[in-house]
Image (cartoon, rainbow over all chains, first blue to last red; front, side, top):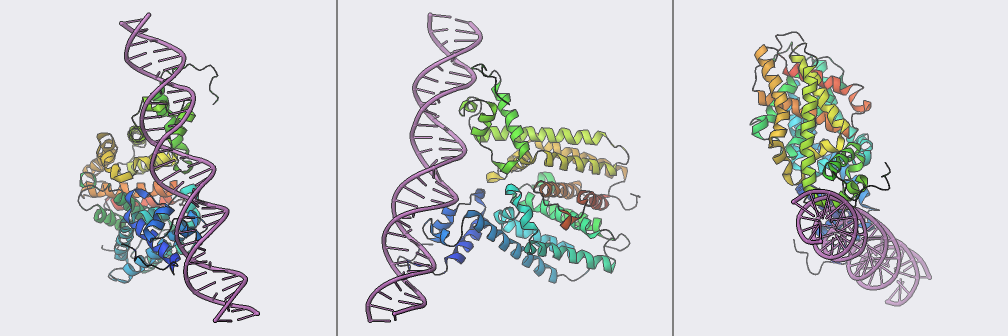
Length: 205
Length: 205
DNA sequence: CCCTTAAGTAGCCAGTGTCAACAATGTATT
DNA sequence: AATACATTGTTGACACTGGCTACTTAAGGG
């Protein structure tokens, strides 16, 4: 990662580089220490350079969080297109993709739920975040229409699904899904319980 | 909250006072800013006084987290003794008590899952934390024995229940359970989905 | 009366966000 | 082509915070 010694004075595309570097850092997670100076250091640039592209730290973080939502939505959409078996069983790969995103980008996922000063609410009402939620709502809607999912208010079912995957993601990130407590395949177990809860009992699983 | 002007030089029971103050601070949540100096300030002592009772910040935090587990277990046990209707429906008040604990002590709850350097794992394998989990396991066990809960590996069912309540708690703490996304009574909806997933379909709900 | 304990005071040290002043580079205008 | 200007970097510093550590001072017990 040594910079070329004769790297040009002007980086060329620092804005993007800063964001990329920051995303990398958020993938590593070591202790949620995210400092602007460290970003600059890793980007091979002076500690004040990022200020030419972002007014302050919060602005960079906000932008990155939004990118996080985009990527999460992409992951979910990708997972959705596979496994077209039962509509009802489309929930499982979707949930798996969700948790995988979180465990693969632990600090980024935390940032997206940052809770710093209740700022998270604003982010989650942004259209890019709502688009993620829509992937879930859409599946539930179609499942209900096809009769594979219980007829209940979808927002409530969405709450259950979201709550479960968010919880499992957080527990996984924190390394708390240890066999001593939750057995050897906690995610499998939790997801099948979820599917039983959402699914229409009149249909076979 | 003014200190008596002629407060004695020796506090008398500062250790306990520090812990109490810290617990109060963790109940307020404002931005997860927990500094030793602030604790000392609120306890009305000098910023170095706590060091006579705790080797460092981490030690204080660890002790407080353990107290958190004790209190959570107490809350759950209290909720369990009420509502003795169906065994299966004992899950709901238990879950409600869990989420209530989290929302009432937001920063404390976060601390208990702190994830700082994977330190959370150790805490959660401590007997005082396992005691919390046992409340849940016990109910599931009895429910299975009575036939009101599906016969499945309990650790898996526990994973589902824990994941869901943890997720809902976190979302609630972060203020993300907004009607726009999850409707007006997300917790109710999520819990009934959970109960359907755990419950034995042969039994009426 | 001394000596241990528990408190207070002062300060070090390391980081961090941010800003201001300067330098290099690219771009536009004359 | 030459010069002015705007962009985008660099360097250095400031303010502040927060953990932690000496050293000093009060209180209380043998």
